[in-house]
Image (cartoon, rainbow, N blue to C red; front, top):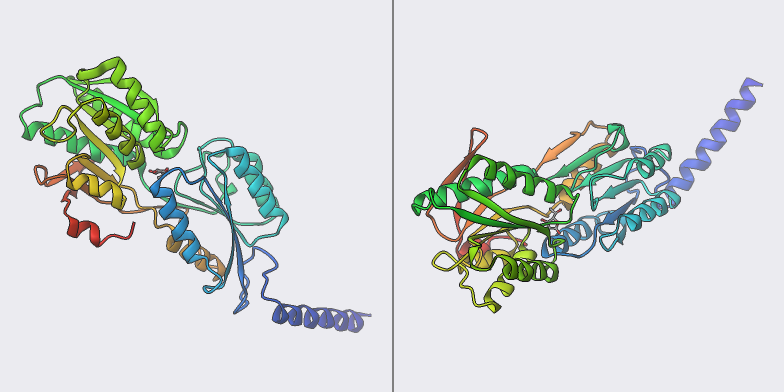
Length: 352
Ligand code: GYE
């Protein structure tokens, strides 16, 4: 009886290994040692709302290419969480090897991530974070420290105002926020609000979401101009595309934007287009947020494939780009960060 069982098992194993040789499609989420096996990755992307996002999608598509041994199922959720949830359910149904999620907002993921866990598919979160009741619902996260970005930007503003002897003047700030509930919005808004509390002369006149888009950034700026007009000294935009829209609105309304003008505009991302506006002072400071996550996610997958442990959370190092060299460095939480005075040469060496 036992002999018979062993023989049956051996035949089954041979059949399985033959099937594995004949097919390039992976059969599960485990770190299988199969050599040339194609790995299927389902990626739920937020949308295409900004230049940052375009660079991020490109990085993922280039990394998870057929030539590199992957089958990428890319889903654009058009900034809607319900679309992301159905994309994840589709990935589960298709038995992908890995699910990669760039979540639009932090909350609301428990149920669907539990479904992925029950299906034994590892989930890697990229860019913004998720807030879940149980950390085992995802395997790893890689992205930016958004609150640190906000703090760096405000430390720069503090030093810049001091250098220009404006540190005792009243400074009126408006915040064009990102998508409400997204980590990038939460961190950058928190960074600003903490700095406003620390400066008795800083006044946060208004905050409103520009949804990380140029069109909405422009619309919000137009309404803020109507309400506060010449009182506005600083426009704190939570990404480059909002800054482009805000600059358009300000210029159209007759404001001079820049170091010698009526108003200064700060931004985040440091895309090529954003940094081009830094070289001409339209954006006075652009705090980097790096979108090139493809290789970082790949490194996590490579380790999981090799049964190695991965860091649960991994922050990316980022730079600070200013229109001039008034401020050479800023210190945040005891750590010093260099500030780069932006030139065309600086931009030409960058990839996005
Ligand atoms: O700053 C913005 C994009 O989550 C870091 O989303 C990302 C942000 C980025 O739309 O441009």
